[in-house]
Amino acid sequence: MRPGAPAGFVHEAAFPGSDREFLDVVVPFVRRGLAADEPVVVAYGPRQRELLSGALGPDSGVLFLDGGEQYARPALALKQYRELFGDLLASGAQRIRVTGEVSYHGLREQWDWWARYESAVNTAWAGLPVWALCPYDVRHTPPRVVDDVRRTHPYRAVPGGHYRDPAYQEPGEFVPGVGAWRDPLEQDAPVLDLADPQPGPARDAVAALRQAAGVSVDDLQALLVAVSEAVTNAWLHGRPPVRLRAWTGPGRLVVSVADAGPGPADPMAGLVPGPRPGGMGLWLAHQLCTHVSLQRDPHGFTVRLAAGRLGG
Image (cartoon, rainbow, N blue to C red; front, side, top):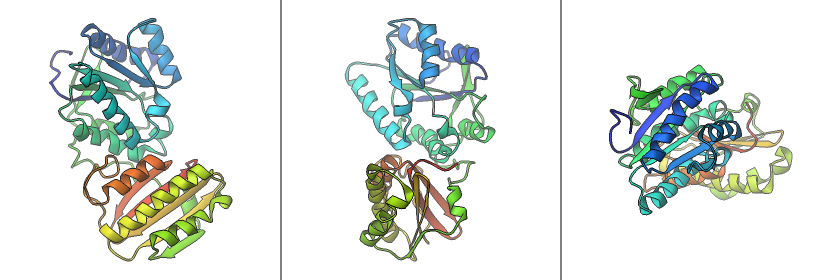
């Protein structure tokens, strides 16, 4: 550990502005872990992986993961990391280091659910002997994302050490500065608008839109499970009226399910399974859909589900 690092879960961000700055922060982090016989997990895309492989040399002992697969969806990332940490600890690891990067699209169209992820890990991994370093390259990270990153990481990493970031907010206090994602298609009238639908008819109506949207059968089936769960949650845990709307575009299908309730209060809702109201249904949706956004406003709560590609 670097001087001053606390025990338990350590979650820190870095903001490199060049390849050199990236290596100056990540390589010492990795090497110190290897020197201490700590498992080191690295999850980046091809370019960053090539940079690190060149700096660390062959047979470094690092466990490389495919960053695109590891960071496909936040609920899936949490699940996969938790399983990996459990395996490593069961094998005798005393401390684990992990460093990775959210994808390019995750920093833009999908940032609202990744912002929630970065906040949620502070609760989900609390107490675990895990040290997570999350570099966000300011060359392609929007300033509004940098602000959210500072508010979700207790520590800021710099070459040679780290310090407590005064901008950090506890998960129960954090609200992403980026609003809930909305597809540009929603500027037009929906192709489907159902008042107070039940799950079965809602699924059938959305299924009929597949050809117009041009999404795959697998994407549609995943979306239908999520639609059923969202409508069921609206009736069980929300307040009437319930309204389902849908839009189709080239290669994508977007569905929103709204009710007049406040939505789940738990900031972990959808990111982890559990007994919380609506927790399992939202968790399934977060694992199955291309994107899920949660929106609260004075009129109620809306779950937005996307299948296929995202619209910017």
